[in-house]
Image (cartoon, helix red, strand yellow):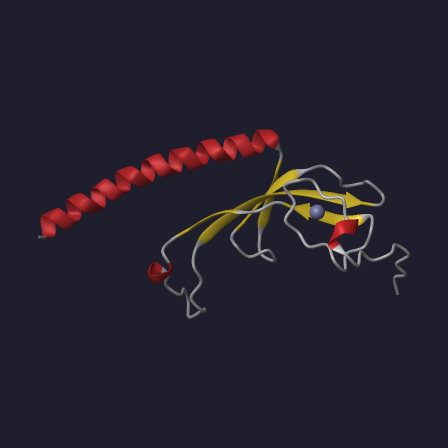
Length: 129
Ligand SMILES: [Zn+2]
């Protein structure tokens, strides 16, 4: 059994959040906070999503936000960017500043390639008509 000695935050004003934090810390423990910024989300149009292997239909998406743990023991207090697949309980990545820059470069290359693929689709549709 774990005994928690830190007091819980009862009002959001008690938490001293960075200006970008959008988390409601009511009920969190003082000294055991995770400040979380608003997310950047990229997803496909909802109507285009298809179920896979009989699982419920989920919309493929990619989500990223900045996160700063504020733990009492200060052991994991490095700010980071967390990237996940839109499911905070699913697989995710923790990126530092350099890794975030590399991920952005990959994203730009992905979008450039996606533009080429869209042009291929347009050409294929034109051939069919
Ligand atoms: Zn916060």
